[in-house]
Amino acid sequence: MYLPPQFAEPRAQELHRIVRENALGMLVTHTAAGLEAHHIPFLLDPASDGPGTLLAHVARANTVWQDVVNGSEVMVVFRGAEGYISPNWYPGKQETHRRVPTWNYEVVHAHGTFHVHEDEKFLRGVLARLTRQHEASQPQPWKMGDAPPDYLAEMLGHIVGIEIRLTRLEGKRKLNQHHAAADREGAIHGLEGQGNAALAKAMQEAPPFTK
Image (cartoon, rainbow, N blue to C red; front, side, top):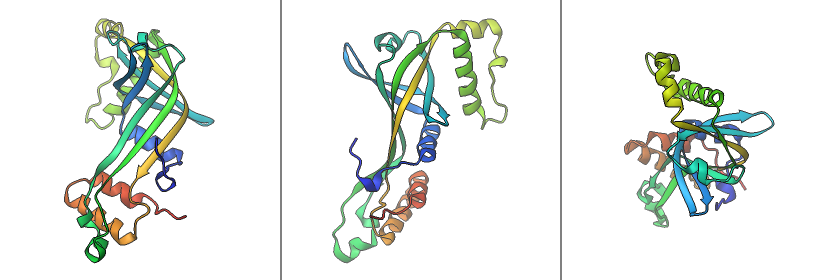
């Protein structure tokens, strides 16, 4: 992707955060039919010596697990906070009128190789971890053991496991890092006024760009 240096995000912890907080990734594949995109919730399994892996499952009826050649290159896109920035929010606009609208956003492109798993052990492991992650905020978290064993076994038969062995993570955070502090602050206040707290927070925490 187009990645000017002021928007490049090399910090692994920030890339991991965006993936964790925005688990619904867009899996982009190239098949015999051409380019395809599938929207799938992923679990990031980081590694100490590399970018790690992405784990997921899809319905067996979803032919992505058959259409994509095992081991082929794919990309998963994770979108973080995003929103429109009005030039009216910049104090500098009132002085010179030399400001224009823009769109700020966070995004991670996860590149890796595609691998299919049909074994029950893999599926149970992925389901258990996904469940723990997404049920953690519930007053009484649901767990796999809550379902009758025969029902759970039946459901497992209807899904297929997906593993993306990551080769690199590419991150972009376009958050006005190259703008004057007053204009950045004005944009943050504007976003807060419109209820976009997530993007306002991201802009507050993003370090300003220095050449």
